[in-house]
Length: 326
Image (cartoon, rainbow, N blue to C red; front, side, top):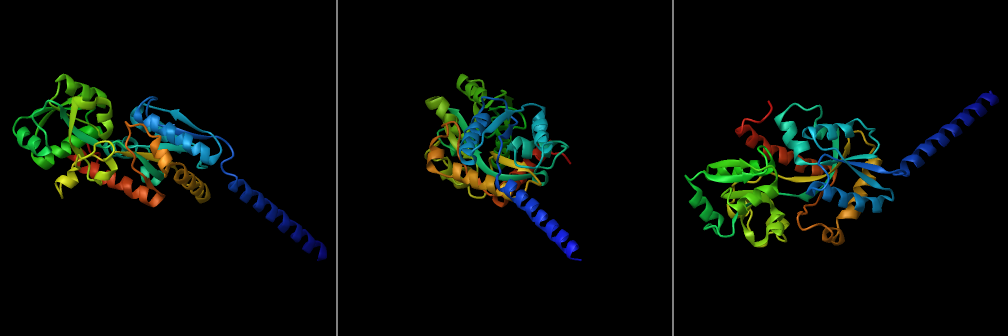
């Protein structure tokens, strides 16, 4: 009997030792480089911002956060590459409106964003504004609404179904306007087309004015968020919600980091703490390029709610265009 008790005691001590080793291993996260998958090509705003955020996270976590660009395939291959990796916190996803809203709303996808991922934060805004040329007779949004009625002006957007196009569609519906939509492939190309006279009006990101200066004039911010989020980019320019309470105009555009669902809670907490320490401060905000607007929402619950609000906003617009997957 004494021998059995000693054996059991030995087993108990061994089990405690193994448990202790497991706890220490978890507490050591991260102990190797982390991969951040970006579903856009290198060089664009999404990629630039992802790299800035990755560098800030690296400093907090003490390991490299390496960006891997996987563009193409309507964002599905990049998204799935994260879900095919272990749920251990060593593969992060740079989620965006196309990957988490537009694509899943317009077609059947092999993933469900809010079931298969744990969103950590939103830390970028590329919400849109309505622009005319600087010599346009329209100096206010009210003048534009009145002048555009019945004219079917040429509207420049980057791509059909992309956020600028959805912003324009929603605005047209809310204010009883019609446009001939001209897709010019990229937002800068849309605004260059505006400057060149190819289109009468264009939708571009809030911060686009930084690149085009006095060649274009912003009339309204196509967003219902608080104006102060955009004050540094378009000082004095109103949001639709501010100018017309009760009106909805402006496809929602944000992005941030997420991990695969099933990632251990303690790992998620490390990532949340590191992202808050790295980015929720004035020094980090000062490092953001002028072409990118900052919009900080942090934590799984709040970020999930933000993403759901984007889906709720996009769905009726896509439905009206006949693009909603049912």
